[in-house]
Length: 435
Image (cartoon, rainbow, N blue to C red; front, side, top):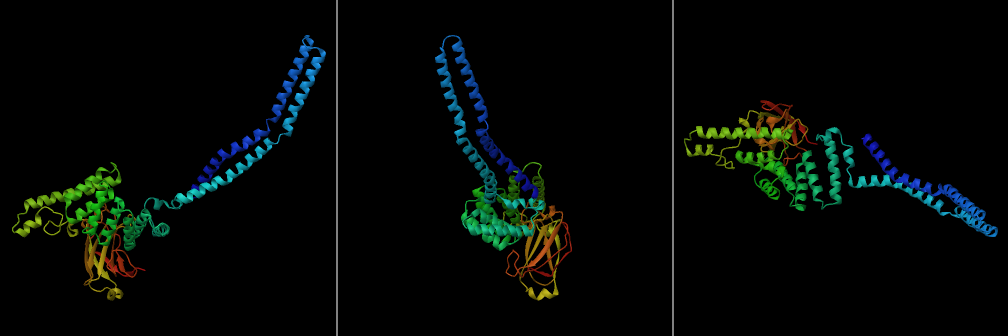
């Protein structure tokens, strides 16, 4: 960061010098050229005096006429040589230029710093390399949230600031305040497709990955506002995938891929997802042609997906997914009494890429311990971020006191060691409490 400010200081000095030096130089030119003017007038005087003498010698002027001409020339020269000594304006102009130069040298850097602090982003200078790469720390998120809360406090009608606050809370895992901030943002800017998509996303996270109802309606609205909004397209693909409509999900994924830079990392990951969905569609079609239904119920089970769970082929199951992670959840004996049967239990998978947004999540109910769980691509929060594509995953089990997806003080939780896709017999022990 010190190098940044050194460069800024050097640039400020260079800009100031371009304005100050001409002012100082103009002040010197007012006084210094006076000597050269005096020499020039003296040379003119000598030339005219020689001309008068030549005229007398040539007989064109009498002696008296030549004497009078010499006297007049002498009087004129006396006046001319006296004027520069009596004139004070050149000195005053030089002092004024010096004063202006001093003011510019002082005020210009101060004005630059003030304007940068007012409309710039000084906080970006203090960001670490990891933060610039997207690996935002909890401390940095807390600082950002505090700054945004101050901003919305000063400007409560700033919809963009509310949206940024909601996104910061979402990244920190604070789902309830994130939802409140985004609800405020969408109320202030109902025609913004990206904010509408962000709001749909936080509704999905609040509902533990369930896209039905309001989340799906908000996604439809976001796509109506901007059919090319990438986030809305990606979320709608996830919604269709979770509902079991792979064909619709594939269409949205292909539309998303068409806008991706060819050869980029994102495009490669998206191509892998598209290939996976295409293979699932092919497998489903092959199954529907080879399995002969023996009853109307069986025919319904293998019919093409209609976008609904009832009366349609089920969506991909984590239990049938080779990359799904499964295991058991236990609870510490000291905390068992605080986990009443029927209490909501969230199981989420987070990647080892530093993001706090879950790869997948499932909602269970507390019952007899140990509890069995399975998390796979079918429970993905976003089809662009799948468990099957992660290099490492950490599973967290959390008992929610109020049934919400966001962490709350007093919630009981435990985490697994880092495991890879397809891991089996993963053990999670709930032995901690959220402060």
